[in-house]
Image: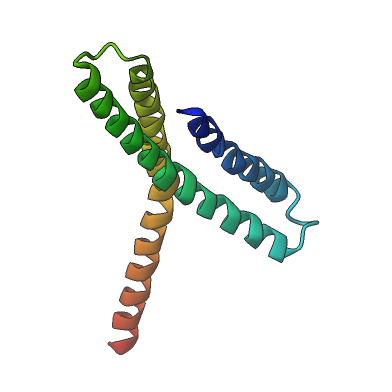
Length: 126
């Protein structure tokens, strides 16, 4: 009943692979074409969002739905798949924290850049 979830949860390793390759590319960026660097960035960020920010919460929703179904069928919380909920909840919480850590500097950089451009336009107009 839950075998598919193992593969879905292990898909996070695709993102981990892109993370490692991104680090390798950055260490050797003088010798790597810029198109490869851009591809690694795009693959890393898109797989991060698709897997960690979309797929994992969807799996959590499925686990919760299955637990509710089991509770309605059996009338007890003593259903073995319920162990998936807290474990996967921890993974979702970690993904949320890591996403915050990953994207906060990017978003702050975008706003600082926009504010600098706006200030420059105001300064040029004076």
